[in-house]
Every structure is written in structure tokens, then in C-alpha cells.
Length: 176
Image (cartoon, rainbow, N blue to C red; front, side, top):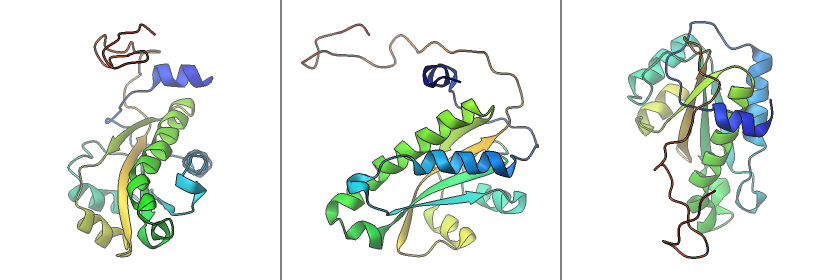
């Protein structure tokens, strides 16, 4: 699938089948996350893959943002000790870098026939306890993954008023 087709087909999917995601596909999704940039190309991002159904059920108990039953989760984590090596910049930029990694996963999921949805509504402490995440780490975002329960339309038109686009100066409308 071409990049622009993935962009056109991408949407939030929260309703998944019970089919597990094969390991080779999970590896491709993790690869996509790892290809995203980090500030200064610093290695402070950690990627936690969860595909154990019992563990996912526990995570759901502390994550109101996960409404469906995903087959897998990919959690973007910042190692704060590693980010400190960049000074303040690493800690500030890590959520942005995690978002870039999450978007790579979302687009790769479309290409691989999966549905995906982001979640940020969760208990940080609950997640750390369930998943043994150390205190020097901060979770940034969860990507929920699985096979969509229903067939998705081949494309979605952006909402007409979704993003205002300006040229050269704020307020100077431009049609893309």
C-alpha cells in the first residue's frame, strides 16, 4: 500500500475481533515505531509490546481510554534518565517523539490490515504497576491494535472544517 493510501484509509478503530495479531506483524509494527525520530537522535524511547490477553484485561482496568478489546498494545515510554542526558530538551520533546512513533504504527497497521486507536486516558501508576515499568520511566501513549470487527470503507474524507490551513501568515487562508 502506498503512503498516501494509508493516510486516506487511517481511522480510529476501537472494535476488534478476538483474533490474535501474529508475531511477524507485531515485529513490523515495532519496526515502524523504531523508525520514528527522537530529538537529537537520542535513544531514550522505550517500546513495550503487550499481547497477553490477561495482561491486556488488567491494563484495561486502569485505562478508560481503551474501550474495545484490542489483541495487542504498543506503549511508548520515555526513559527519563536517558532523556536527562539531553537536558531539558529531551523531557520536553519526548511526548512529541512518542507521537511520531505512534503515528508510524497507525499507518503501518492500516497497511497490514489492522485497526488501531490511540489512548492517553489511563492511570500512569496503575500501568507502571501492572507492567513493571520502572519509576525512572514515563508512559507517553498507548496504541491499541487488532483486526477490525467490521469492514472499513476504503477511504474517509477529512471533515471540511477539521484543519484550517494558512499560507505565510496566520489567518491567510490557503486551499490545499
